[in-house]
Length: 96
Image (cartoon, rainbow, N blue to C red):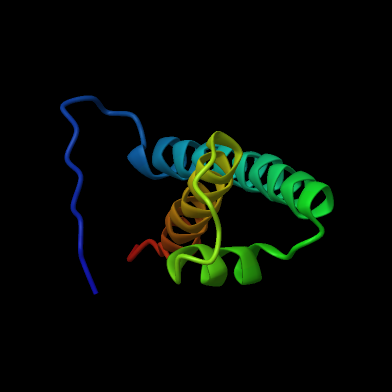
């Protein structure tokens, strides 16, 4: 577990400001997740292949390299990172 302490030279309450910023960031991440999931679905429908199966075949050199496949892999990796960031934000709790 990581701790973070914020100190401000201003007299305003930091907690509501930080909570709002974190909430907004989470909304943006969730929107990105939905867009990326939609993009993956488009690839799956186009190639009649699930993303996990595609990744497995690609990593085992059973798929040729194409620009579309590079984009598909990029979207998959992006989704992984977005989900990790969103999960991290969801796990943040304020001590006081």
